[in-house]
Length: 267
Image 1 (cartoon, rainbow, N blue to C red):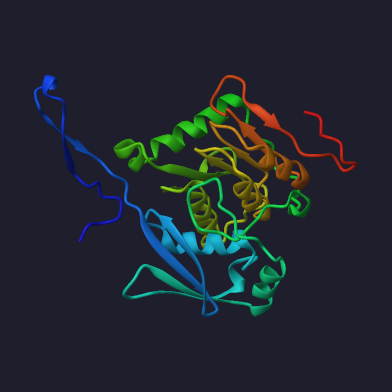
Image 2: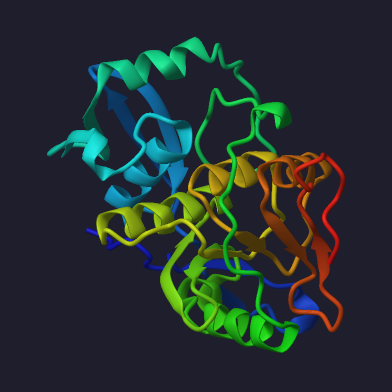
């Protein structure tokens, strides 16, 4: 049986002018993984099949089914299929249902979700560390890219990492950028690592859903070599979270939160 992360060798015919040679192709693995919460089918991820426990826990946290690991009574993997049964506090499930979430097609790869980001409902982030200086931020991203074994092999993967500004604390890769974020948040929860005040590094654009997940976790800042969406920036401003676009360039773009009076913070 093929192990998670293996590449699948394929061949294709090249144009005759190149001698008709055959070239090997590398593919990144993508599989469906389901989750039931308190006996109810809840979500199916299309994901890279590793760190699946972390994925499930991080997703439950990001969607509000758990506030900490203590709220997760049980997480049992299926023995015959890729899936999990989760048991959480019924009161938290009812809170999620009372949100009356609408089904949307998210802009990022990952789970089919019923979350619709409402900027006015953004969680509040306590004051935390500011993003590192640009040179240090580039070094952290350099380390993030260096850890990306699947990226080196296929080029078709996203990565995420949590950082305290000095080092990377948790790292994950996934075909879906939201999945990679869920994995690192889940890893931190499993390690009993305090999330509030940490930084989150991602390799893809920062979407509204990703910004909301980060704000719910108390993340101080999210940085990307790409850019945030307009709705992500609005969520972050209201939550008190900093977004950093073009983070590996010479001039990163800082999207600052709102001050207490509703005006934009200086900086």
